[in-house]
Image 1 (cartoon, rainbow, N blue to C red):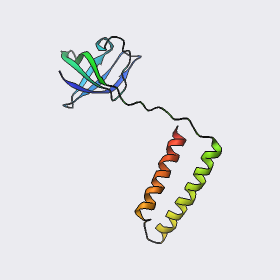
Image 2 (image 1 turned 45 degrees about the vertical axis):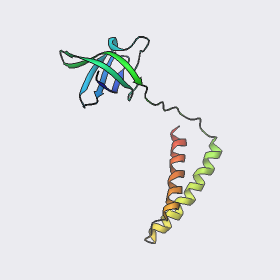
Image 3 (image 1 turned 180 degrees about the vertical axis):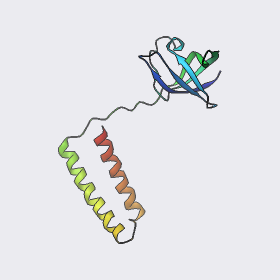
Image 4 (image 1 turned 90 degrees about the vertical axis):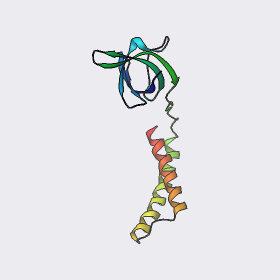
Length: 127
């Protein structure tokens, strides 16, 4: 039985597409979803039967193998706490900027620390 991942699926329209392991795109209709499943998240791994439809290959009888990882949003920190992190980040970036103006990249360990703080602040702002 072929397998692949959900490329996209729109519940309101009742269809979407799967990208098979061999790279082919397979049409999937809501009628092919397993009992109790009403939506598919992109990245969900599944197995399916294939039939040739009017517009190309069509998935039949889907079987979920692995749900796509959930990207649950973390609770935001208090704005005051975020402000302190951003002020510290500005100091770190100022040091990096001074080094770059002098023609030197920061040491690798220091660069990793700055990158870690940058990612954390970006994640907090995006939450």
